[in-house]
Image 1 (tube, rainbow, N blue to C red):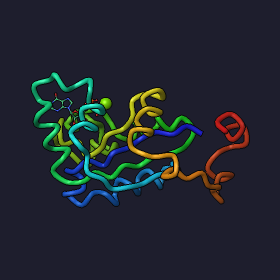
Image 2: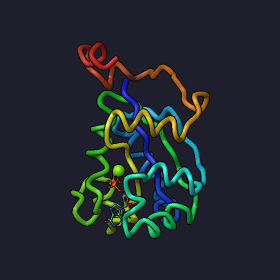
Image 3: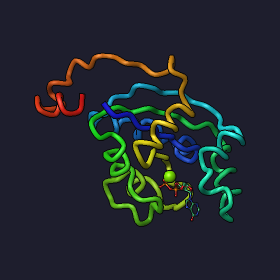
Image 4: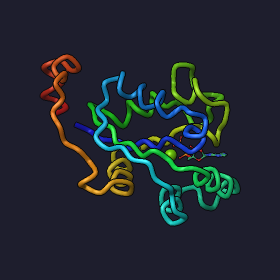
Length: 157
Ligand code: IDP
Ligand code: MG
């Protein structure tokens, strides 16, 4: 099954949204295979947001990502990368559809409560950036048969 990376950003931690956000992914049927709280260093942030370091808002983004810890979460499921991006909504929370995490929990383009990997290739890199191999868990779910149809279980194994 495909894996993706989520960061619950410091603004969400401060606002007490951590549980609500994790619950949404659990309820959807995405399996949590890694979960930890951590502070982001300058180097790690520069690597993670390499596509934005030259942008004028980067100093604000950097400060906002270091003001409290983040919760890093690795989620697993069929087409997890695309599904999670749909659940998160577009970058500017004011434009994110109601029903999405950003659409429901934020008014901001910067303080938009979560990060989610945007492609399968980036998910592989980002999971390695935030988790050691022994921090990821491969376990059987007792309810897989109720989460996926027979054909899907073979296709997305
Ligand atoms: P994404 O988080 O939806 O993938 P990216 O373009 O990768 O969006 O940007 C990473 C993060 O940088 C965003 O989630 C947001 O916090 C911040 N950001 C992106 N564009 C802007 C902007 O125009 N102003 C302020 N912050 C921004
Ligand atoms: Mg991005």
